[in-house]
Length: 87
Image (cartoon, rainbow, N blue to C red; front, side, top):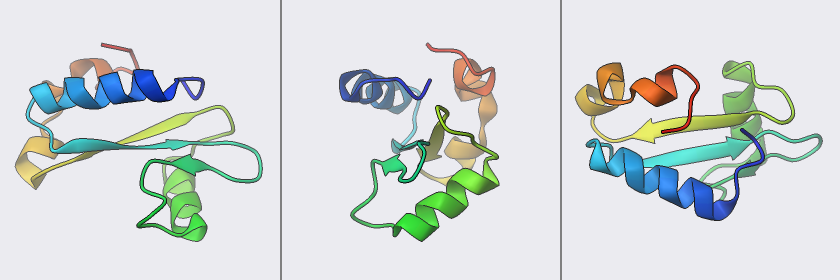
């Protein structure tokens, strides 16, 4: 999934918003430097720590749903993402 284009990620972000999420933060895990949609707000060390916590490997895509705890933690809203599938 790390090969998603910016346009595809924007589409995915819009999709999760229709399900009630506030938005979506992505981390494209790469050798050397990870690409993150929130690089303005997070250091490379913080981004790497999030990728490590997700046990992501180069080529993986980490998706973090934003919004209220109740909406973001409700996995029934995001069945495709929970199963590692595209909507």
